[in-house]
Image (cartoon, rainbow, N blue to C red; front, side):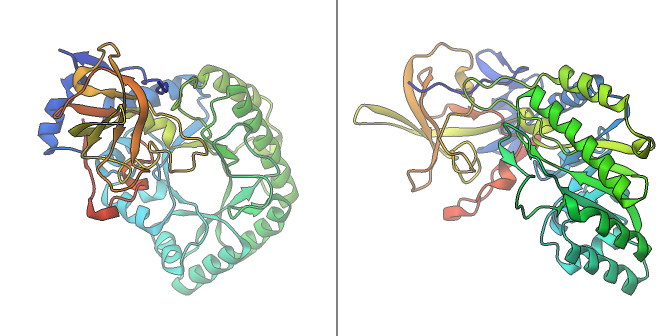
Length: 408
């Protein structure tokens, strides 16, 4: 029997059924119109933001990286909770605008921005995080052509990465950002162009659970930001410290020690050099804010036994939850936190695999986990589904189409 990942805190049962926002999930499935369903808890998001505010220095702003989950009702909620947003495409920028996100609070990162995306961002007053000298030249030229001074920051490819991170976004050759040693010259180019200088975006890695490693990386980031500002010859107006805070997905994972990260960052802020004295700082988080607030629910449509193994076949699958299937960057497949939602909290009775409806052996949501006995009609739940689920999975595969989504 293979262990399951840890179910996040804050979930309970009502009459033996998993509950969210004070109602059994069967109620929300009916409200949404059926399964599969991504169910997001607004209260969970509010608590996570409040916990971050309490732990982090007051000087630190919080930004939401909407790549984690761009569901419009969730964005509208986030607009009441965070200080800014980060988008990674023109499409995300359009979604943010339609959801009522104030575009002056939006920054736009990501390599390969098209000229049309650059122009839309400049017209909207969005801050562009430049990924290269070539992108800078195009943005400056577009600003001159349309008669608007673009708001330009530089994404820095640092000389270090975030130790223990699931995805390393800095250090060595990367498609992201400008190598640190080339940044001062580009800053001077931006200033000479008449563009609005907006500072640095320094993102070393993501999905880290080691608080000491996160704190050490933030300290290195502040040191690098100060050095580059000194070499550029201009005070730094703003610095995005990136994110990096991970959530527990797999057996043995433990939550980040948030108070430790906040304490260490406060200590760093207390001894900032003069060049950073007036700098505004933010932390950009996506997964950490919304990941544990989501549950993916799929209905069991068949129960079968093959060579002695039990398979619970659902109407969902990897086309909605690619990461849970182990096909989104995972080297060794491990089980996400999973349960039988309609028998939540019931003792383990059998070993079973929860699989999807796709005609591929890759379509496994949980492999040989311990569950109470489940039958046709029961609901299977995959937790930590609030980030990189619906928007990061191939919903068109085999013509299956998207899942329902609901914020409650």
